[in-house]
Image (cartoon, rainbow over all chains, first blue to last red; front, side, top):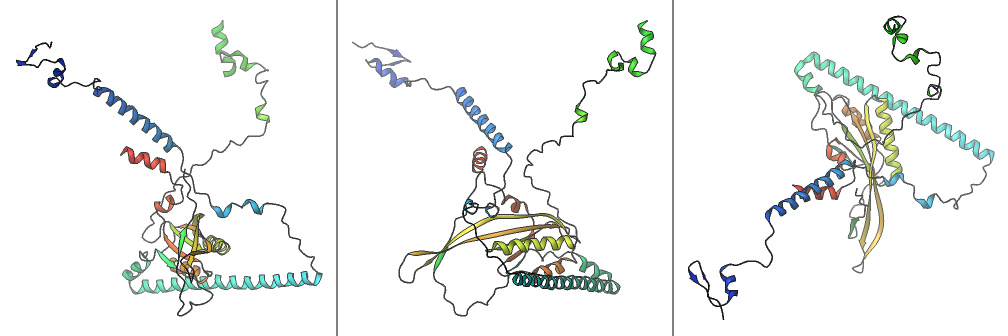
Length: 180
Length: 183
């Protein structure tokens, strides 16, 4: 026997469950918006704290592999025994070293002299230019914006072979990536 | 009577702490006899130095970058350039090494589709940073460095930027992720 319910001037059907049709309600009460906002704020604060902590840590430089000796070279088991040098051999070596030192010294002095000569001739040219016209002198002394960046490949032992057909292949970068 | 005591005598006697005037004052002191301790130096934080722009007649911070597959050549060349700058009284800010890059070179076999490992090449880079190079001397310096450039060493001279400095630091993916999330 169903009850007859009159709600809002509308006669409902027999079953009570029909109430749900007119008043849709959830099984669980909806979470209040305030709790959501608080949770979001708490999350944001946690993230900000984490960010501050990470930012406090100073950035580190990537370690250079060149300067780290691999462990296998520090093993003392591999030792080379050099043969003993005869006095003539050691004498010859010392004299050769002295000749090389002299040669290098002459080379270095020639270089220094060349630099001095370059600078002096440049200064003289600028002085003459100044006497000629002040405008040109000022323009010449200004820095050249087009000079940098400057690139140059080093010289090679042999020139490239003409008509050389290189085999197909590829290069893979396997550098170790460091993260902090 | 106490007021009379405070006005007579010198400052020590006049001080209300009567023991500073006694002959036994400072009897327990010994720290002044010990050798001075050097304060512990805290780890210096890696910070970017100011990049100078230079004036109209001078260049600012310039990086001389030397790259090569051969470590010895590049090291010795970097040392040579540094000593040259010292000799020519050009201010050298820093002289450092960039991280080494390793490349695996594979080539395709003549008959077959398999890639074979040819070599593992390591690329080394050294940087000498100079400041205050005068505009008239720059071409001369370039000339000297070029004439002494060894085989296989690639030379690059460019202005120093923040990006160059950042490339030396370790990457921080967590920080970047958080920053991306925040914004």
